[in-house]
Image 1 (cartoon, helix red, strand yellow):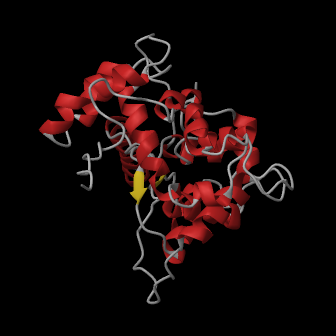
Image 2 (image 1 turned 180 degrees about the horizontal axis):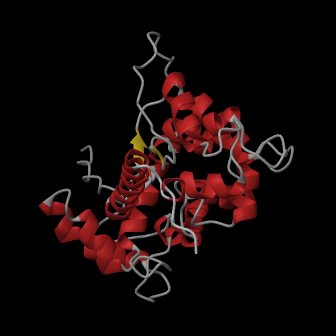
Length: 294
């Protein structure tokens, strides 16, 4: 056996260097094992609240549309529209979307979105949307829009739901209007109230005096209609009694007489009955007897 030479063993300096490198690598590995990297931050989901707009403005309309466009393709799909537009989640996905998709391309572009926004404001209600991207309300446009006249508001309502060339609003078109306004089917009885000449269609003249009050009438009925079929006489009476104590004394009698079928429910058609007479209340003021000439 030959004696081990100095070449069989690394020099002391080399050995120290190798051991130092190994120790350093072990320390780095241990440090990495102990310190976990911070978790990737998940973007905060938007859309946890509804934004309510009670005035129309073009800049706000464009900003709101962009906030609802989740994938940034400058259009809203059926899924995006149903999530972002108030009322779309309560009506049929096909009928509700088709009512807004005027060009029938399967998407809502900004003009479609803007038309919905305008309609809600001009009908006297508000526009609500749920953003999926950050929304910052811009300053209103420097020029104020012209006020909408009663006649132009009627034209807006009629054109919005028009199904044919008939200048009168049919029952089917009125039902479509209720759908756009997110109202229950039980509100269809309002058609009979508005159709004063009993022609079966609503003329512009019949709609013009009341078009701005339609949201209020529907809201009053909706609040009193707790069973979602028709408001009870008692519920409507309590709502009307809030206006004045005098109304509270008369409303029970008035509404009971108006309840023609005695079912305890007050259909809007019954409110429009023109032959309702209150017991003990003369329909015409009695004329005093004139003294006969001698």
